[in-house]
Image (tube, rainbow, N blue to C red; front, side):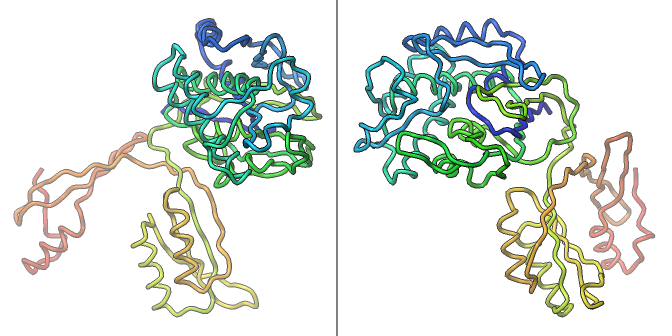
Length: 406
């Protein structure tokens, strides 16, 4: 399975993601030609070599009438009643301060000579940013308007990432926990904490952390792109890496300011499961069994217990529940509801499985199912025990007397 892993140890911005992904594609010239043919007024796109902390990568440069927006990579969104407020970041451009609505932006995107899929991806990412800005300002997305220069810069970044993802066509996109940075950031409405409100809203449900690096490492544009394209968040999966790209940011820190993108293959039979564990010393066996059944009913892949010694040498039970990512929240609630535990530990586990199939075989007493498992050089078959038990009861014989006719 083709897998893209995005390492966001220094956050993420649109230009950083574009630079990292650009390094992974083969037809670089074709990509740049498409980007510069979008028809965005005054916009020029370049992929420039850049060195950070001794690492050579790519800086994805978007200039608008010769000037590159460096302080923010998000569309400078304002609600109508704050349309007069612009920071110094915009003041150095000699362009009229016109504003465009989300519908206006969609009209621009509709004019691109790109596939419908890419254009729809761009619209969807831009809509996420507008919704986040609307939430931050307490306004509907229809009231959000974007400064023209910032909009053009953001549209170029977002379109570049969407086009690059389409060209790479990964089956899976895994994103590391995202470093948001720390401190404060200057915006049109004043000085805001990092992550800025729109970024924080976009990153809800995403594993994030704050580091000692002062500054806004993850922008709303970067957060929206990660949120839209990620299929999983977490550590790098076991994969065979074929190519690596470094997308460099504008700012300089003691740490290499880049997003690292790794493209490779993982075995199709590798999936990710989550393991919940909790210690219990004050429940009866009957109630533990009931709780385990409720977890199975809630979609757990496996539930089992082990005897342990807890604080004060009290004998207890270690309850373990395995589940798929989409069942995490529901099963966590069930654990707290049906057990007396005060805390649950979570582990993210790559799971390697054999491919399983079922066929039917005949015996002297009727048909039974045969379960087959294969992979990693192993092939195993065994009859379904429930079928053997049913036949054994019906004919009053032990299961060992039932022979498969193959």
